[in-house]
Image 1 (tube, helix red, strand yellow):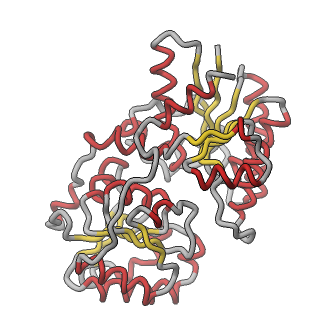
Image 2: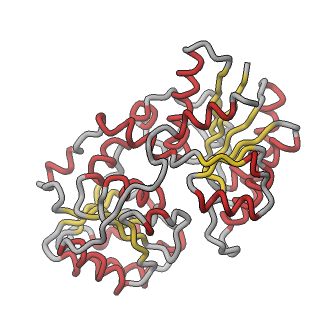
Length: 361
């Protein structure tokens, strides 16, 4: 029996792991000797994880909560290491699967290797090449420790191989987010707020922001939002914002067409974004989903770890430049956006590729 421990450190991880859990269950039902447990490093009452998330993703809630919750990244790293080591000592585990680049993910990776277990990294080879970013350091550490590196594309393959990973440990499996998006597409539902605001498909813009550094610069963020609202003209901008972002931008609520609304379930937000005229975001995941949906997207970063969304997709980078953002919004409103196509292996079969690879252990 292959026992896979899947460790999530934040809400976006669950969205990526859901297809893998379903795939494991499918193979097990077909008679394969494989099983998995889902571990969350946070607590069961985490406000970032809405109650409907697991229902939307069609997976069970985590089997285990490590219960670590603190602001200091160094403190969090130490507490996760201690809690996860205790988990491994009590639970039969053959391989630990982690995703992305959180401090908690790095902590889990270190403990996994120190205790002699196999480590697999989902979305390996993701790089910004900015060593001032704590997450970039996390990525290097996690990839360096991993026995199995699951990448989303050829660029990531090249990166991990150039950094010393053995070619036979690197698997280009495709974009796992597309598995979730394709699976959930029939279940996505128009949110009630869309009717309340009288939104028509392709006639509104979706805006999200969550990055701490962007929210901390109130002067520049205000300039960006003001120019964005001005460029949108009569087009409504719908902003599903969580507490921190809502507090910063509440002063603009109701300004022309700018409307701050409550955070939505995965399927409700998926519907809203898929039917928008355009999307403005600082989220790489949201930008990837916009490319899949063929929706114009302006990303509030100067870089992206997902170059395929720029080269083939609908994404453009505007950084934190208010004028570039205004130009992008104007282009959305006028329908003057670039053509796009789907990158390789965005086919919804990534999870099966991953589970098949792990079953060869």
